[in-house]
Image (cartoon, rainbow, N blue to C red; front, side, top):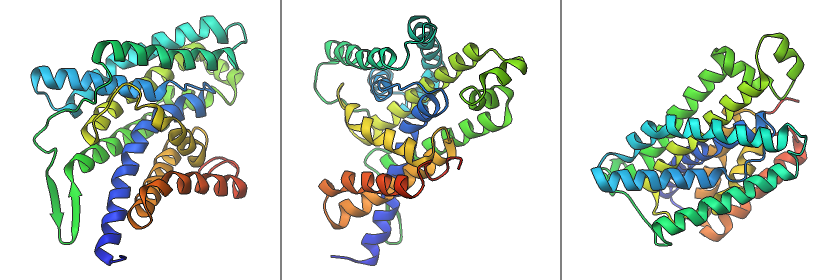
Amino acid sequence: MFTFDLLINAVAAGLMLGGFYAAVAIGLSITFGQLDIVNIAHPTFVILGSFVAFVINESFGIDPVLIGVVFMPIFYFLGMGLYQIYYVSFEKTGQESLSGLAFFFGLMFILEVLMILAFGVDYRLVSAAYIGETLHIGPLDLPLRMLIPAVAATLMTIAVVLYMSKTFMGKAIMAVSQDRLALQLMGADPIRVKRIALGIAIATAALAGALLIIIQPVEPSVGRLYIGRIFAIVVLGGMGSISGTFFAAILIGVVESFIATFYGPSWAPAVGFGILLLTLAIRPQGLFGRA
């Protein structure tokens, strides 16, 4: 039954869900949109971040969001090392198109198997004082297990946007796929730029994973559920546009929440991808892509 209270709660839930989607998609927006690297394993790194948060939270009782932030530098260096392997093995020899995709596809399964060997296939969750609590503002109900991840994801997005737009290295990352020669003339090494960019992308997965396990229990293969959705968000927002990715994630989150509330959850993913197809038919470069 359609009521105003139900409507505003559906929109609020969609905004919070979209904020989380942005946290997952922002790393892929950097690798796929700005580096032309199809890192299909990105959601698996998010799940790895979830299990890191689980282990530390279970052992020491530290807040999952704090764990995600603390482990971002470690994931950053992991991403830099990953790019070095990718560059030497595929990009340097000009085989990155198909062989590179196969590399990340294989990496996804290897990480999944390692996590299954370490944690099994049971769902794991974390504990925090705010999980299970709800903020009530009039008719509006805001579950803190959704609100806190949404706020953290928004702050991370703002930080990445500021880094990309205000620093030399951020501008170099945005330019590396557009004009590599001009970038070299500006004194920047494209390989180093890409190494740092992939490091940043994987670092965001650490926090996104910590946010995911706050929202829902996870098991090693859960990341596959997000592959299609986050690629759709990146394309919908405009290839390489971090702010576009954020607003596309919010749009998909609100639409999915609205459809799930009033028509059933099974329709939500289909409608989200329908918006993507409609947008690409009207504006192929995405909502915030360059014309």
